[in-house]
Length: 221
Image (cartoon, rainbow, N blue to C red):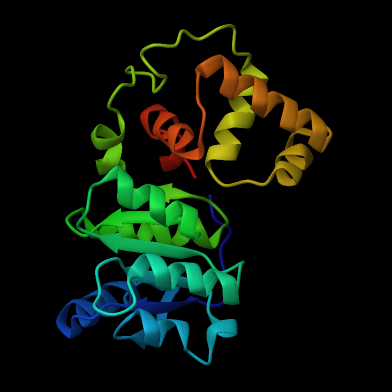
């Protein structure tokens, strides 16, 4: 759970459609712990905002003319690496998700999903977590079994501790944070993560997110 904030989370809302942007602003601003304090019509305007240091979260449309949501995300993260960004899009496509994660996005929400998903994503990423819209589960599940592991790979004795470490990694916790939570060394966490990934046949972050989605871990974040 995300810890309560004494002040509302300050949000930059980026969308090139005025009507959509205003609708999202009304949705967000009615929440006591959220507030849209900055708006941008496109990616370039978002990157050039002068109040970037005052923001807590960015909500970014993916498809915009000029500077795309992917490139704007990349440039914002270069300017302020700790700033969490939620991408809002109609594209339920693994390619877009993969590119956005590489660019530094922390959340991925479909526009056609219930509004509660966007609000949940904003709060999750503000707390340092990764959030992927659960509606993407079936798109990410190709070649994976019901438990999220590659169908060509059998689980080989993954332990409870390895499972716990992998769950926390998928939710966005850093190795150092996990080590503090579990009262072990950072090196031990690295070993548990490597062993779990190997046993489950997971070879990349996108595959770990598939696994986490199908296990329901990202909804716990």
